[in-house]
Length: 255
Length: 363
Ligand SMILES: Nc1ncnc2c1ncn2[C@@H]1O[C@H](COP(=O)(O)OP(=O)(O)OP(=O)(O)O)[C@@H](O)[C@H]1O
Ligand SMILES: [Mg+2]
Image (cartoon, rainbow over all chains, first blue to last red; front, side):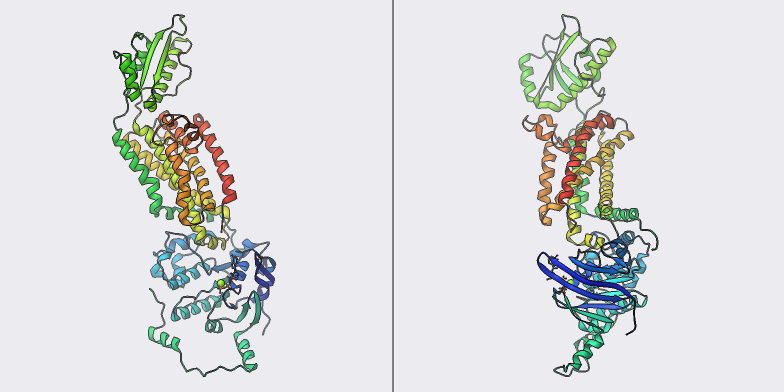
């Protein structure tokens, strides 16, 4: 693999919640312009790790550098160049999507056209709707729109496709690939392995706060096969998801 | 780096968002505008005509004295001169008379007259009005004759003005409006922003904490002042609420309102910090607002309260806001004249923000 620029480097990252060790000495690097996946079971420490990198949580120890800025010394410089989608977040009450995007452009200190931002995630029709009145998938898409406001170098997406229908998921993959093709680095967590396989250039498997594997999806699969693993049953040429996609079409669902 | 980041812009963006949100929140509008206006309407119509003071002149009083003449000239009093003392005392107790006055010639010459006034606890509001009228009169008489005073304090300028129920009720309602928007509004907003992880999302942007607080504050103050202005104007144009120096008076009232709402927001910050859940906010807020609503002279003059209650009343910040508002609106006092009231509000502000800094939670 060719030598690539490191944009995020995490060294010996430790996070304790009281005496519970949520993250126990993580080491990894994210390269510029790749889609990097953090995978692992519930409670593995993915969100904790992301939010430390996003400067939203205090680490216990370790070192994190984002695009040359240390999270200890320059959290504000980091905030300006990242876009963050939280696993759980809310938006200012009583405002419609346009007004929310205006608010965020003020908070990021940039000027954007809210309609263009909504167009990126295909929510123009909901411009005047309140966030609360959106469906789950539309909420996710709106959250992603808010991460793009400051034209960030890196975006963090914490389970962006959880709760989406199969084609909404695929459309979101297209959107993410698209964002990446414009030079943005993407760090994503997901519980869908097909998604990780399709989307991510490299993935790290995290369990109980430790990285147990880190490589390209291809390499990880090859390693497994080389170790003599075989699928129990040959799969059919299509699965139920293919049926779903085939029956319901490929477009964004508007409602 | 691109353009330098502007904290002012971020603050204003937040203020704008928050203001929009408040304007669309039914509870904010109901508490800040509807409730006070309903009370003003009710009292405005009830006490529409304005007040006259019923005063009994004690039998055997000197009739040919300048005090009584001046009193009658004000047009604010109805003096009954031929009632007997028994009746007078009974009617005083019932509040049918607002006061009993007797004027005696001073045999020693200086001062020329003694004016004795007996007020009644049944009608303390009007008693207070009489007090200031008398002060004014004695001041005028004394300066004319360059003689020592009959009554000791210099009155503020009440002369010839009709003191209507609205002049008492409106400042009280205004204070209540500021109190509820300050306490409830602030507590709910910060609690729900925290609880719904709105603030967490904000923290992922370069915005400073102070910008969030100031932005919210600007919106809240703006909304409160708009409400105050609305209440004052409705009161003035529909119910003849007295604004002595017109726009200047309104401006002074708005300055006081700003000060009041900032202090009350401090309570709101504290409540948002100590509330464990959304449903505990109203009871905790009520513990703060209700006593002030009842004891700070919103509906009745605090002089009407039993004497053991009065020290409590006099400890509450709303009491001073109401008091200052009334002085400014009706008596035409300037801000400097109500510095004492403002100072006490300031002390409350310092105290409550000191507590808020300790109890406020961001996440
Ligand atoms: N604020 C907190 N206080 C105490 N413990 C916490 C806190 N946040 C997370 N934890 C614990 O830390 C561990 C890691 O949590 P984290 O949210 O990082 O997991 P995750 O990998 O994102 O899981 P999921 O896939 O369910 O989102 C969990 O055991 C969780 O209970
Ligand atoms: Mg998570």
